Image (cartoon, rainbow, N blue to C red; front, side, top):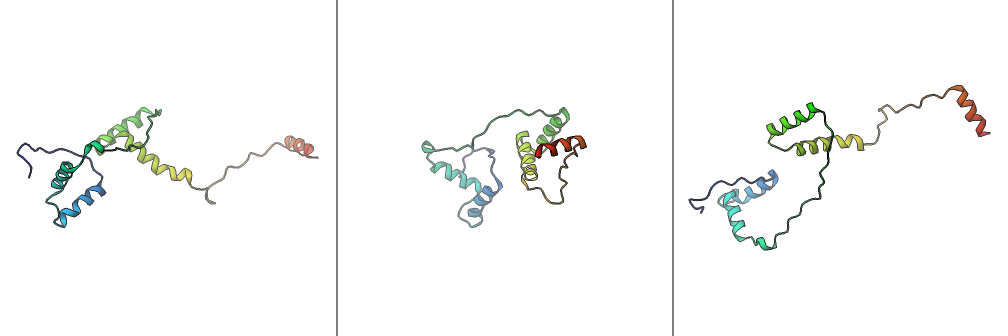
Length: 126
């Protein structure tokens, strides 16, 4: 049971993980998600904790002022970081670059060479 000094402590969790924590509560194996987390924290040995962070690099990107302003505004309204918005946009855009060119897409046409150039090229082949 939480003590009188227990205060709310915000923790960011992925929705899927929170759903996983809610299952024992629904099944009656835990009183609440908070109780489950308190029990887990009391039993966990933090001496052997290994935290794995994916390798990341900070890069600089030149952005127009209006786009930068828009990113900051959206990040505030969505309660997320500008970096998260950039990653989401790039993740959505990458498949268009990675997909093979479809037959319906226009192909770059070669510029026709002037007749004099064609004759010189034909003469070199002989």
